[in-house]
Image 1 (cartoon, rainbow, N blue to C red):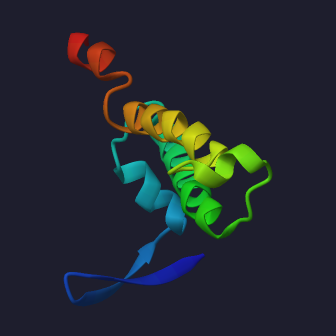
Image 2: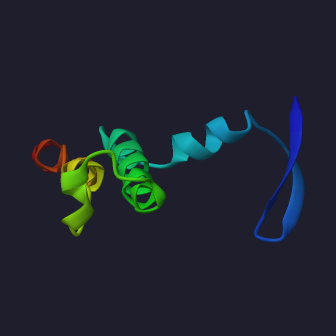
Length: 93
């Protein structure tokens, strides 16, 4: 199957597997997409909790509710996996 791809403003007929070629060219370390998913999901949850109604009465007087406090560690873990995990192993090789 052939796809037309525009690279550098020039169109030419090239053999392509679609998005598979894009992802294979990127050199992302192990754990990057896991961290990306954690960071996106729990950041989304953090902001959704602002519009959600509190489930317990003690949350009414808190700056952030319990769901937001529980999201923060997962956002930090996601950032760790995206930028710092597996860097030591890659540097040793």
